[in-house]
Image 1 (tube, helix red, strand yellow):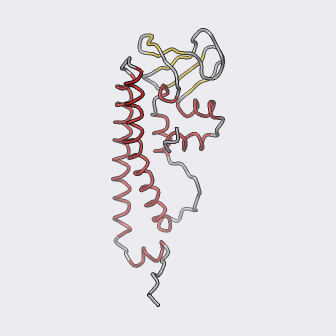
Image 2: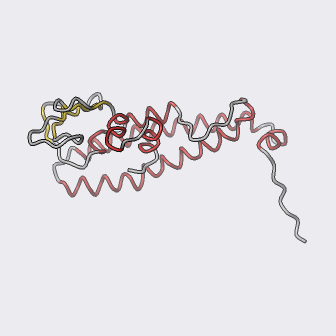
Image 3: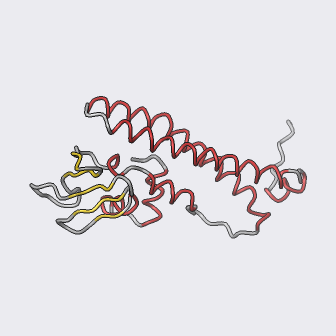
Length: 186
């Protein structure tokens, strides 16, 4: 019979490889830095894409952005999550399923609201104006304040940041809305 590979728990692996206690936090820090830079790059590229008036251009390049950089963001998140789970015995945190981090919340709020809505907006100064995604209307009353990345409908008085918008549109709770935004399931 061939030798079966022995399965070790995370605690046992940390005892066998004690240097992992210093290496893994450094890796998590490095991945977190890469993640922050990538989120910033995605937001900047998305802004540039949405500034182009050509609808096909915007569709193509937004799709490309999702298939490349957003996918890279997903891989980084998976690596961070895996490393944090591995280090859990060291920090003695209780295991939680579907836990969201402050970084994920920050990244979810950074996703441009106009990318979440499948419609055209017109510029009004530094803001965007369009029809409300929450109710039927003939006159546009939904404003996106691009600098703050917040939206508000003056017709139905609904809005907020990207997380609030997804919560209203998809009828999700806060955690599910954050996971929806950072998980690339749009």
